[in-house]
Image 1: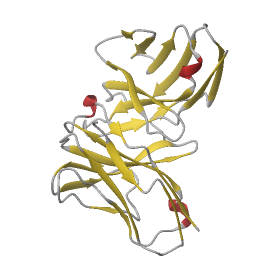
Image 2: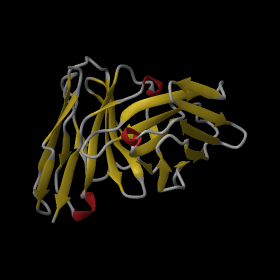
Image 3: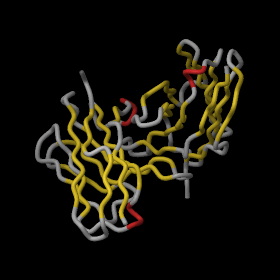
Length: 112
Length: 114
């Protein structure tokens, strides 16, 4: 049973517009969340993170929002660029802190 | 350059033939881990190591072994590979065991077992 779910396998967005990637989790013990980006033939790379004591974290064009009551987080990319085309994984720190639990990933395609 | 290096990048093998995928990091990280990525399932943890000589099972450890004799190396061993172990494997390392530090991943090993 997946504890971190990314229900949209793919998303297509026009260059310059906003990309919104969603993630839901079921374990209320998760207290730290991360987004990773993965290009083909490469390993995932860290993008942005958020602690459960916050509801928003921003880094340049990337903003992550956390809604604890809904057990939902989202990654906003504004403006989207063709180089943002990749697979995005949502991850949560496991309740013992010693692992990341990943979602299935969302393929983002930014069209120019 | 700080990195996690996995070898080989691609491997095709036959059922039952023992194999080892190597992983090495040059960042003096304490924590290392192996994940496998399968379509629709994301990345699932196989084994992890909090430090030298300390290893523990992740979520899908069946059919795999690991060892951590040195801080920099964390090989993944498949004693008798089966077709259901066909997957994309990633090694990761982190400064400390707390996952909030984030992981540095290798480039992946695509394994096919026929």
